[in-house]
Length: 417
Ligand code: AMP
Ligand code: GLY
Image 1 (cartoon, rainbow, N blue to C red):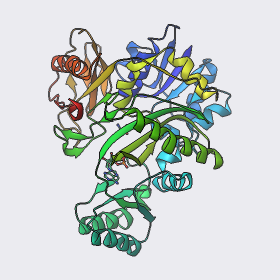
Image 2: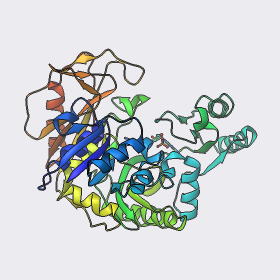
Image 3: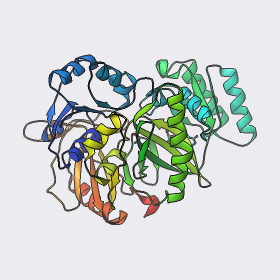
Image 4: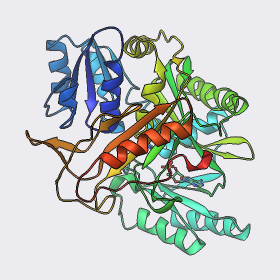
């Protein structure tokens, strides 16, 4: 198949690498791709999504897969479909599940799905009242900007004052631009987090192995939030019973509500779930694969991935087959991540190791070597029959990746090891 993958991260690299493991031969194109995706296919430059759709039409692309939320929220699926192109992902209307936390909460309420007790408002007095009510019950709150803020719009407040300040910053000082013109304030939930992924065709879904991300920069979940410093799957923290509960009480009713709202959901539904007393409570929805979760899910998918995603895009979902194995992904980041830019640094690529490989993200190709360009540079993925072996494989490889300022967490999967 001729397949176009939109994006430039480790997630898109992992999708490409996995597609090349299909028995069917594929021709891959990445738009825009990164300095290493050229090893898997061809990188395509584009100025806007309409131009990219025209290019796809001219080049007889048979399937397009969208990595990130930005093109989805900008309506890439609607644009490609208007040219009669097959594309895997939600429409602009359905992508609001991630693009607007207010919309997401409305859908959850309609669907009867459990989520943190919350209000959404643009009124400071109303916000203060909710915060004071929670404080009176000795409960902390979390303040969230409404729109897409690349993970920066969530403040976990340690006191009522801190929460009120966050609300003021988001509403009156416009620190998040339009994204913060409304806020969601919700009760703080204490439990463990899961990343739950369902491939959806508008009506039906097929669940993937349950993953855990590690959002904080440092070992022991210390330091600032990041895009994710590592992940593993499947996690034994998700029992069969809990998975059934999430499918029945979260995914199925959400798909039904989306259909009733005339924005049926096709693509990857990624539920960020907090498990409290064995009950799944939805923290957020994303409308795409997680990064680095995608990197540990791809090696676990059996069968023909391209056929599976194309069938879902056509509304003809077939259940995904999953391998009996575990994957652990360790993110290697640049010196100043996530605080700021880092000097480009030459990467010494390691020799191959059994049971492990690298998905590249923030790299450019300097002809003689790959350069780390700053941010989350690559993910070392280990795959094995146990989590411990998978982690060992990933860490042996991570230790071999050399560039100035390289850093990574040493405790990925610690919750289960
Ligand atoms: P979100 O973008 O909504 O997923 O929030 C980012 C992160 O903030 C989540 O992965 C959680 O670790 C944390 N978080 C968000 N909402 C809550 C909540 N209600 N209670 C506790 N932690 C939360
Ligand atoms: N790893 C979390 C995300 O992709 O949003």
